[in-house]
Length: 439
Image 1: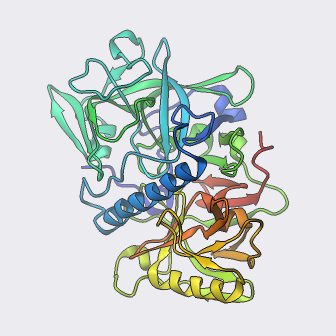
Image 2 (image 1 turned 90 degrees about the vertical axis):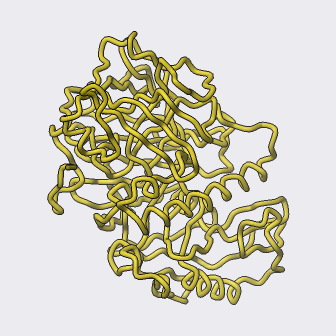
């Protein structure tokens, strides 16, 4: 049986799985580069496409991701449906093992298990970086079936006394292998200092396939579940992590992700809202009360067709860095769009990429009303870059989209905010920040 956690102390897993001894991380925190997958400095950058084409691709990834979020929210106990596609919008450079092997992973706040491809490969997708060979690492240790980590994952089996895991994602991708502990090493965003953590629970995948990119090595799970990286780091980072996402048009700038004391969000302009714990525990839930368009305040309403837990008053929206667009239930989105069309004086045109619903002809800046997201205890005023996006030289679109039942605060709405997660105090904080200058 998976270990059950007290509702009031659900975010940290101190020393139940692993205990860390990194003095630098414990006392100083650390910051790493967080690279958007379509950035010109990203290994995943597709130079054969225009910037408009790459942007449209990120919107399409959003709609695909939303479909899987809806499945997992509807059926949190279904092992397959609770796993969204093995993707995200940002990547992290790490090293794994001793001696260290480079590990380029998708950083995903919508997944828990951190895994990489491992030798020997029964079936591995093509990978440009060296595939990790656990036999060459002095710190690699497989986990037995009776281990707490094995029981916590919930998608495991026993093979010769060792813990094997099975992850079949909703998009048809998969990773099968053994659960183990290993040393992970982070490269600092500035300077040469590195931060290492021993005995991190990972998946060592010997059979992997699907839509994974050949420039990547696997996935870094940053969700709220028991085995996510942030939950495992637990007390060593004080339950704190943050990120500052640069706008899409800043292609040569790098976003930052911080852990521990570096992740503190304080000072003028900070607002905070409670985190709500729900199933599945992978996702981070906030409570959306309303959205205002200028002086028009629209109270949040979920889908009238759904009785799912996500539509309840508390914890009705997921905050996710791996979804580009902000997603709202259809009825609420329709009200929001109607208010915007009354306020914006411009020629309405279709989205040339066929993804977004509210677009206008505009060669320059489009005059739009102030949009404010009202979360419990926190009012977040969105700048035009957070709520509208140029999808073509002369077309600007509203960067929110409808879904049947779901609400997600996407990464466009979070750009140029320092967003801090405090899992000890169970809150998320927002501070307006020029993320191109954040160190």
